[in-house]
Image (cartoon, rainbow, N blue to C red; front, side):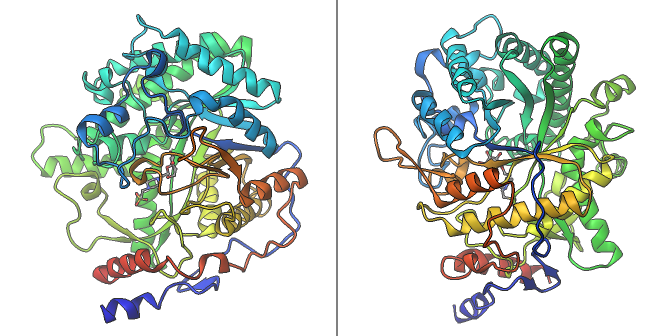
Length: 530
Ligand code: GBH
């Protein structure tokens, strides 16, 4: 215990210089956000709507997970049954979006609310009405809608037919996309097919902490991705040929990525970091945004080779036909990027993960530096703004200076309206974004904060809060109150610049108290690696 206590004294004390990496993104400059830069704010259906079985909505895989598979899934035992009750509070939600002064509201549609069993023979008019009402409310305030078709809540009936591992889902998803286009294309300028497909496939099919928690890594995660990419491309092409001529909107996908910082400057660590990016982000983005299409060549080579060694008759990584490669390539009008934090990477010096598994295929080890600022209720969320800047540059270099829309970025705490940590986080990450645009010449077109309001944060339940607005989950109306960060964000948007008192060397908001447990855990991981 004394040992742990001594270790904990390593925790960050408010200085931007840490071993090997200055976390600050760059010195203070007078950069401003261009006039046409888009500001937005994001949410997801399952995390805010509640009304899980109201008005004909079908069961989603998340409803099934928390009601049937494992009622103790969330660490506080909560469910998304009611959440922030946005099904009944959408008018207030639109008003909050308006109060922030953002251009864009990015929200998701619940597939089972529209098609209870996922298929087009049964369409729930009440569900369609709900989103139409929300869109009309946004229109009233002149807010542009960005609609995410799939933020993880698959109809349970489709899961029972294999979910994303069943190739027929490509057509089912296309039917769903058509219903959305037919009903809402006149009101939606930006469409996002999928939010964070890596969470769906790697964590939901390869692991246990997202629904449907299949835990079949090395197989189901690759299959899931394969079908999901085809479904994405099909939804893109349908819009492109049938709806774009009339409505002129844009279609893309939102990918999540941590920044991967090589542990040292050694060639091997640099290779580990590059491999991390290619085996995670690149797995999804190389097929869509690269000039050659398909999965990253190195990923194909390694998984094919390992599959041979493991005595499989074919690679565990499915193959696209040349026609499919062409069909998927170029199906993104912009690059939607979700980003929160950074990891160090190094090559594994012994076998990692089960054999076979995605982790084993990667053969790398990641960890965070306990000295990086944190103090978040999400133990993975360390504050490394320079990582955001480096990630934006990596994406730009890799994909020919593609137009990037940051579709999520934010910070979690335990609660309260005086959220100095979140205010500081947004200052630092927006500073990183400005440096990226002005100094690295990246093509960043916009930024959405995650999240408009506190919500049901998946396995963290209601204990980890990402909102700009506080939600009183105990009150009957789920009362919403702006936090200090909401006021700060509104001011940034209005002035097109960072707050006057923003200091890029100041991380003191993240010093003191509740960093102890997460940092002890990270130090222990760090030591076990060396
Ligand atoms: C987003 O995921 C989601 O889109 C959103 O629904 C969610 O509420 C929000 O972020 C906050 O979590 O694998 O060790 O890094 C963010 C990406 C990836 C962050 C998985 C948490 C888990 C720990 N997430 N990560 S780790």
